[in-house]
Each structure stands twice: as C-alpha cells, then as structure tokens.
Length: 253
Figure (cartoon, one colour):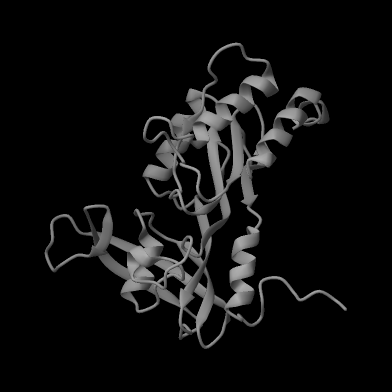
C-alpha cells in the first residue's frame, strides 16, 4: 500500500489508540484489516455490554477513514477470547465472502500456525496428531467409534524447546475445529499450560498464540503473510518454565 495511505495523520492517530488497547495492525489496505488480537478480547460480538474486536475496529475505521456511520467489519474466523494472535478482518463484503469460503473449506492455500506451551516434555520432537473429535456442551472431546457427530482433526507439530516440566511446540493446523489444539494435546497427555478447562495446570490463560497466518489476498493477485509478535505474558511463561532454548535470548550483561 502506498505511503500516503499508511502515513495519513488520521490513520496514524487511530492506530496509536488501537495499540493502547493492545491491538497491533499487521497489514491493512482497502480490502483487509489484519491485526494481532490480545487475549481477553472477544473475536466477535458477545453478551450485551462487553466490548468485542468488531466494536473496536469499527471505531478505528470511522476515525482513520472519517466515516460518519458504522463501518463494515467482516469477521471471517475467530480466536478464543483467551487466545492471542493474528486475525484477518474484511473491510468489504466481497473480501468477506471470499475469505469466509477459504476458511470454511479449510483451503490448502490457508496456513495457520500457533505456538503452544504444553505440559511435560513432548516426544518425538516432530509428528502429527490425528483424532476424531466431537463438540459437547462447549467442550471438544474424543468421539466414540461410529459417532455421527465425530469430525477428524489433524495437526502437525515441531518441538521448539523443552524442559522437564513443559514443551514449546510450533503447531500447524491441517483442519480447523473449535479448541482443536487444546483438545488434541490434552488427549495426547500434554494439556496446555494454563488451560484448566482441558485438565492443564491452572493459569490466567492457555499458553496458546496464533503466531502466523497466511492466505491469498481475496481481491489482488498476491499472498498475505502475517506474523503476530508473542505477548510479554507468554514470553514470561516461557522463562518461568525454563524452556531450552528460550523464546527470547537472555539479555547480554
């Protein structure tokens, strides 16, 4: 996008306000608004009175673009409230329709990569997890043989670092079911750190971050590659668990 778009004073002012809310703009043009969502913020509208990402981005667009009325905010996928990371939001209905199809079809052109901190040392250091899962009362669990509601879930993982207590793994989703990473690692005996809902050690939030998201631009003949910085609370978790090598090198004396 040209410099005039990126450096417009109204847009820069609006972005600074987003950053004060912990939201970082990773990419933006006339069709897309890609951000790093902080944990604790709803990806889509929820109970009355609770602020969600669409609410915040609507305010951003109206300020950045001088819109007098409500701006179009097309949510095409979501992250759990207590999960941080990269998200793409459509600014037009055309872009929303094409991106929604991409996510719904689990297109091979869509790449979703997460960092997860899981309990205990994971062996082997690289592999796949494949389970048949079902959703029941807000929990994703292992489905029984022949369960008509069962859906195949598949992911690939690489261990980036570990200690006796935990491992940091880079997870690439092949499918995209609700709570898939949380459920599959719990079933494999490695629940996420901080994820008491899936029998992990209690914490403020699950150790899970959507670090990378890539997809074909819905309108242009280009590919969008997003990298969401790891939040400070997860870097602190990494150090607390004594993961080797650490996510961030120790400071030089």
